[in-house]
Length: 276
Ligand code: SAM
Image (cartoon, rainbow, N blue to C red):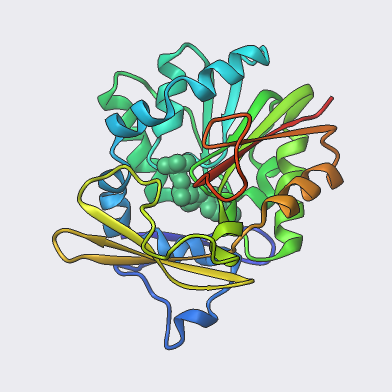
């Protein structure tokens, strides 16, 4: 199989890799480009079991569709396509969608999933840090969903990615970005055994390690297969501040799709950042 990796200049390199590789000291892996080594083919194949599409569609309802319609968005850039769930939902709802991901395995899976749903996906293979080298159009909305922004391990990478998202938006455009509620986890307000957001029934997702710069999660499938993701635990207030600092004028945050929520309760936060 082929795995794409990104060097310092942002050129996507490819290498062969069949299994996840965290080296001798998995807790030391805190590197942005490492997502390429984490979303290997065997994990990508299982990803749709992790996020059962029908159950997820029920859980999310029309939240993103309604939000985007309210904002008057028609042309949407999905920068964290993954296996294509949101791209396909938005295409079905009549939006014009372009689907970006830095991982080729994910894009290939998304393309075939969309075809199975009767849609032809328009895909762009690009790392967020150098997005505008590959995206040459302006969009009404950029979506970055499914706790994807957490893959950026350095403050500088997060600022760069947000600035790249900002640049692909038209003057009145909006960024919709979600994240796990890491505050609750970091502040020990939830048990590590807490039942997380993923909707697949054949998988157990749980944190194996948490500190201020690493959340390492284990994904354990019924057939015994185990995968890991090393992520950066984003605090809600920090993400809101970054969005303002790169130029977004207004940031509204929802907790599990609700406008009013108690800080500790939601599994996920959704930030809606408006450019004007
Ligand atoms: N949005 C999808 C969902 O909700 O099912 C996928 C979520 S998956 C957790 C994160 C996705 O972000 C992966 O497909 C990964 O390849 C992509 N990704 C992570 N870091 C990236 C980066 N720096 N540039 C481009 N894509 C990236």
